[in-house]
Image 1 (tube, rainbow, N blue to C red):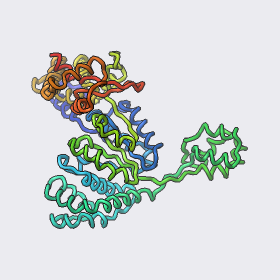
Image 2 (cartoon, rainbow, N blue to C red):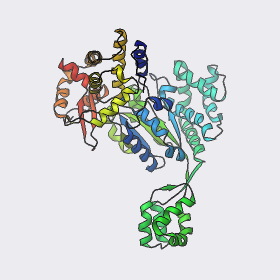
Image 3 (tube, rainbow, N blue to C red):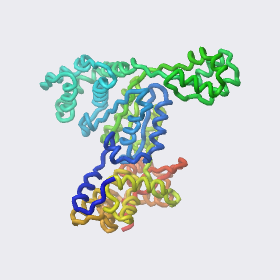
Image 4 (cartoon, rainbow, N blue to C red):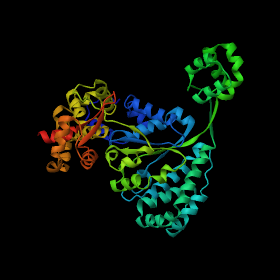
Length: 475
């Protein structure tokens, strides 16, 4: 939490801390709120642990809701790291976001896998990569080697249109070769293993076939799924269930069927995909996603909420497990306050600005107008800090907060076509439902955050008009 300070410079420092960006590692320790999206982090981590080995998973949510920060937290999950090698891939870091094709993203994934190998004690070979890329690299005088070669190729992809075109020209006829090399890179990670002792449904069934009594199996079922890193701890846990004599009697079977050795696979996080232009994203997921679903690795994709309402989503949805990240609403569908959510958002703010630099009513105003989108809340606070700095004020009061809301609401209203979408917005505002609205309208309104897809803690889903738009329409 920032130190209390009434100096004008402190407000400028707070302004800098409200720059919206994913919180990774040290930045999360300094600015993150552990309880924010805690349930979503735990649920996603559990989904990864229990899903099929090469399962593909969508993390669905509005842009700015906190998907990248959530992925970073899952990446750092110690249990997942023990069983997998997390590999994060972002087209934002590697590619030119305004000119991306699926083959570019596949190449970015290949480069990310090569870069992640040393951390897994794997000595990467660049031969296959260079065989694919060298003809173009030589044409454009890329002379580096090793990891510097990967960085140089990435830089040229980001900055040089002619390089991108030449690379695609050469790679498209070799798409199957590129896929094969990505699979081979994944298999390098899988040669490492994760070992533990655990009773699973399969191992209990095997014990039943060995004529272990039903009474013993019933007691052993109490520790089904629990992992133990050593044989001693495993047998002690079993002793607590069936006693030392039965444990000694069944020990050879318990060790045989309870010792688990699994490949320690690459776990791929494809982040920032919702930052791609819609035509690129649409082509990637609804026409060329097979390039990624066929890869022998577990992959998580960030996926914008509005795209889940595309008619084309019906054709791909069954190929993925689907997890959601929802806005942190301070008001429920019924109008009742979500006090826990409000406290979490307050903590998020006060980790960036001292409590005596913003009044309580100003903070309440900004939280209520954010719609529960973390990016919008930081944008409001950043605008309020900027306004306070201009006034040479040391405290953000409610007047300054309302001015910040007015500024962002005006931006929202400039893009809103009331003649085309006004009736639809009025319907949702009254009913919290999109029933009867066309998919095209729903996608447009969700894409630009005129509408928000929300969920209650009990799983009830509903829709609301973004407070920015409400504020603009009510003026």
